[in-house]
Image (cartoon, rainbow, N blue to C red; front, side, top):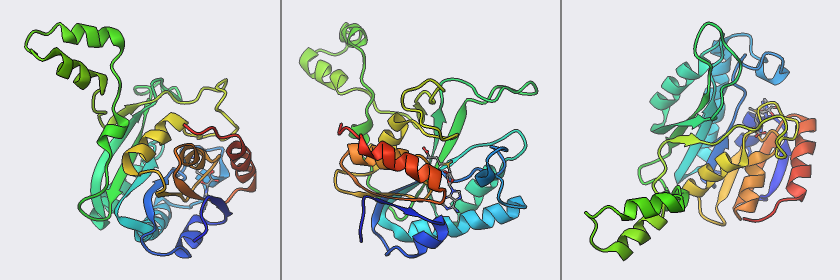
Length: 260
Ligand SMILES: C[S@@+](CC[C@H](N)C(=O)[O-])C[C@H]1O[C@@H](n2cnc3c(N)ncnc32)[C@H](O)[C@@H]1O
């Protein structure tokens, strides 16, 4: 199967053409359903029931394409008017094996609400195909800063200071609340897609679930964030995107990727 390319087309139809069990990770950031009211791609279903049925179909295909030890990450956002993702999580967790629910803490709020707290997070439902999913916990440790390391080394309960220093320098395990600032309008990374995800966030999903050389598939590639991240981390990748303008943006971004 040819990888490292973008297929222009419909996610469900294109996933149906792919072989079984080829992807180590699927990173899917699908339309949310009526959350971004000005985007035609987010308002293309008449009812929530239609949207949920469509999601069930492309997730089933994604799970078929996923390797037995792979993970499927599905982004979801709740809007002021719609909360389809709550129902989607419940249904998908009954149809497939639930692995985790990650909270992407965007660090700043968005879409000011007067009638409730200001939203600041998105969710990432994680499904696994079978028991024994690959998960590289050490690859996504969070480093302590130098001052914190020195402070913690003063703790006299730890007699072997060298071992303690080595332990602290490895950093701490990341929790399932991933705090990565969302992209501001002025950010150099921002490239004209209304729901572009930060590369630092996608890097974490790819690093924890794959090794170099593994294949990552994104059925809703948008501006190409998953492809850029996979390329710079030396993973194979495959993206599907319907919109030709976003496809152009993604191709341009891929030209200037620097390996990490
Ligand atoms: C939430 S955005 C993905 C953004 C992406 N993660 C990024 O960082 O740029 C969803 C994308 O799905 C695309 N899309 C909508 N319906 C689709 C379909 N049926 N097949 C493939 N792509 C579709 C939209 O054009 C949009 O770019």
